[in-house]
Length: 146
Length: 116
Image (cartoon, rainbow over all chains, first blue to last red; front, side):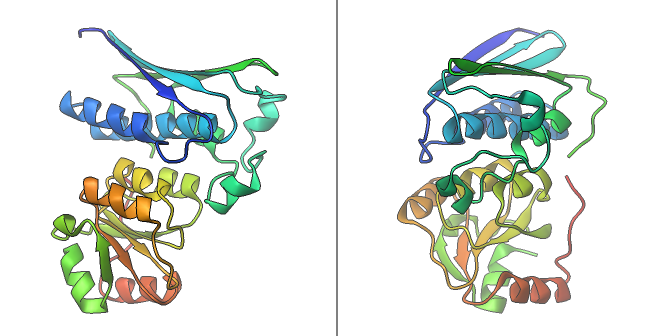
């Protein structure tokens, strides 16, 4: 399979354009006739990752790459970082603002949803400097959620 | 069942995305927490929510939903209407609670379709 790379900018607190990168990626994968279940898993992870930057992060970038047997979504932002990653991974834990919560975000489900739907997820954070989340999807994937 | 039939049957008010009224409704989902909806809403569902802000459109598009119903007499934001029109995604309103509409939809045979 041919390799492909694309990137998208994500702006912090920009709820107006939030989700556009994910919609773009979804249509791209559809046009490539990918498995619908796999596309949905990628869309969930990409959207949650995008919203994490919009809600919590500084400005960031989403890198999409497809090579051989895998698709990788890497999201890097120069936000405040995550103090305690294992705590942030716990379902229900959230540090979202009241504004975000009123909009129906901040349920503490973003990172758990990402973990559930990606074949592999790596999160690194330097508090005060940046966060990098990398999610890998195998094209012949055994996962069947959602 | 088509979105149009539900609009006519229950007097749902189309606010945006009328071009999508012939979409097939394959199930239903109620939810106001977007991550929950993003993770669990079935493909092709009609989504009942009190949220009217712009971000519901991205969730509905990504979950390939048939339509959104904003319940409880609430109205969508102007940006939501514009974005939904671009996406040809029907946004409807209903003056009563999600519970009431969900009950009626269920009685009509719109069940909780399996995910995905």
